[in-house]
Length: 47
Image (cartoon, rainbow, N blue to C red; front, side):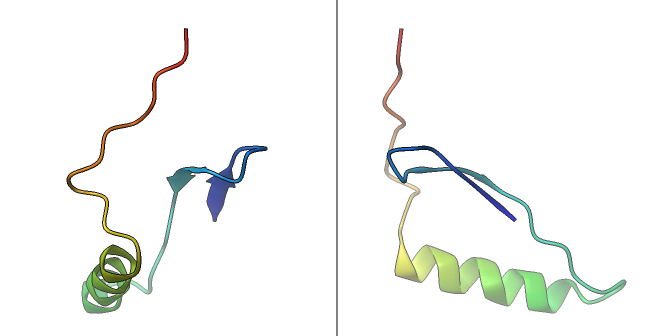
């Protein structure tokens, strides 16, 4: 599940895996970070 604003910017994500299968979620997280790096980015704040 992902939250997308009208301007198509992602505002949140929630992923669930099988019980005891954290490896799959960590692999997904690595793939998402590789596709769209975010660690050095800051959100644009609106007043």
